[in-house]
Length: 356
Ligand SMILES: [Mg+2]
Image (tube, rainbow, N blue to C red; front, side, top):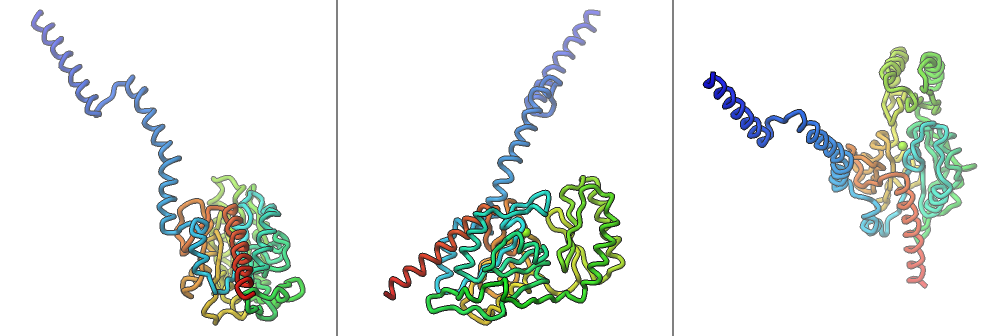
């Protein structure tokens, strides 16, 4: 009996010691230890992903796509003696992304800055919205407008005249009564009207979904749709398009974009503007394109292939992009544009001082 008792005690002691050794090696935790220790470890991992991992990946992304603000002086050094032409996307670039796309207003401050920029450089706004809608948001008569991802352009009626001091002639920039429309997808208009009618009926029951008529393209917004209905909505849109093989479907920021399958995008619109401005063959032009959409990548590619200009993406998260530079959000776009207008004024006044 005594022998059995001694054996049991020895076994318990050995088991206790083994457990302690395993705990020390991190191989096993007691229930009380798990409650006290495991929870803080998980919490610290969450904190790391929220506050450390994302910023560091953004910082490393910015090494490849540096801030256009931080490198402003370097950019302007490269622009000296060149004719800058400014291209701007609208949503997410000049205005914040909002739940209701009809309320994506730009601030008065942004409007004033874009107006100042347009006084200094030919400026065009290329948006996915209808041209009339983006014009109603921007409310400026000294900029050019292209809607439907560049498929609806109001181009200058005559090339921009650039004076000897590098300043462009503003008289060519009154777009209210001076412009020539260019609409390469015009023949698709009857089909677009038909798709709109079918879509509006089909998605009526999906709460929060809304269809926007952009003239030459259609947007189906799902920012206010419940996440579990995203797939159903996408299938509905795809089923409508089965009867319209000449159209394609792309996804933007919480929006499905339906557009004619023609070889025309924001990049073509950029080239078209340069042509009609009389600047496309100029070896010393410098297009600056600022945008946040996937569709803006087409314009970034064009700037790349021309080997002249600054493609700038607006993004607060790391993204695959052809852009060389970045700005975090519309508030940084505002500062950049403001500095650009000031830079032009200073460089013009110092030039006139030098020439007396
Ligand atoms: Mg955008």
